[in-house]
Length: 488
Image 1 (cartoon, helix red, strand yellow):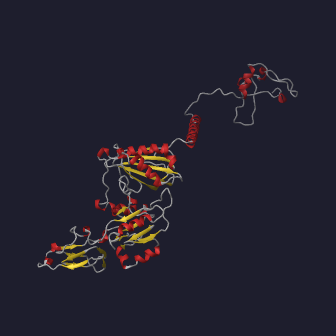
Image 2: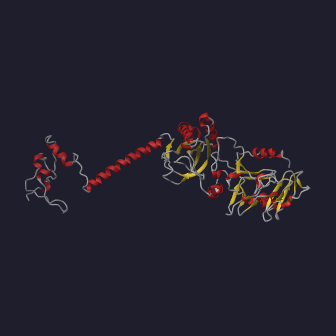
Image 3: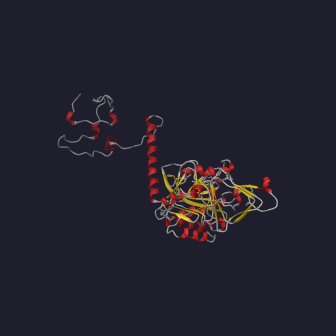
């Protein structure tokens, strides 16, 4: 295949689909002309002996003719020759074969892992303000994968036996959209040389048709992704420049900057909102050096309006949210400051214009030089929020009164008696206003109020022994019954 076919194939792959898709392209190759595949970081020359490990399986694409002094070939491998490519023996006067400096070794191709984010790039993601969190750097389940034409490769699918789900895959210019077609290719000799390991590939015919985006699906292999990404540093993350660093969902290491978590409605469109953020905020001069990652994630749900912090969350299950991660190229104390300013502007815009784009609420977390992580909310007060606050206030007052009553009953708190009028107090009040009674035909005329006071030695007998057996005449807590009015 000629080199000019590559742009045509890529254009066809990118624009023949009706739905919007994300294309992830594999970067490394096992091409003969790739200097990074040789231990001396150069292509073999006519005085060199090209040595391939006899025990390693490899597929090598050769683009042009080469002259070599000699070559040691693998026992199980293949060489794919482009038109006009091939090998010729060096016919020089000297014999450099005895000189080990002329031996050049092809490096082990098994070192390339599917789960290494540094080995993938997103096609057409050419905006300097955009990046992806680590787990989304490798292909997601709705992505289309491209292994470029005129390149050979060998990729390890992992030792865990996990099935990698994709929307489609293109290998050396041939696109596979069904499992049957791909399975047939993987069982071929070339397919076995290109893919190895216990993992497998599976194609999902349906692409992501949700305007709000789809979850990537790589959370369960985050440990593999981070191990591959940090293998050169011994598995340790670099120390962030700020003390109160953040760790976004899907990121292996902490960062300096800000995170926004957006709650959205069915009217939300992820691609449209991303373009708005780029045009309105990130493309402005004051946002120079700020980069953004935006995607749908699942995280712990919190009470609406509550502050999200990295050290304490009131969890109530999980829910899909839109995560916006902002970081900048600041160093030292300035690390993350520009990103925080942009995040604050976005949060204000969410409160003012978010409803026009299907955004209900935005919560913010940001790093700081003091080592603390603060939270802000970008939600306008709503009728539901006001009602909730009123209910909370009433419940708080009831709890306060209940607590005071309990303390009063236990004797820990003495309350001033309140002059609350009762039935008996009303009778005393009536005595000050004269006789306000009426005649009863059964009992005759109502005696005067002063006549209701019994003599000094009147005793009241009650069936309940818990009550006192006598009452003082001045208590006003008794009355005479004309039916039983006799001398005791």
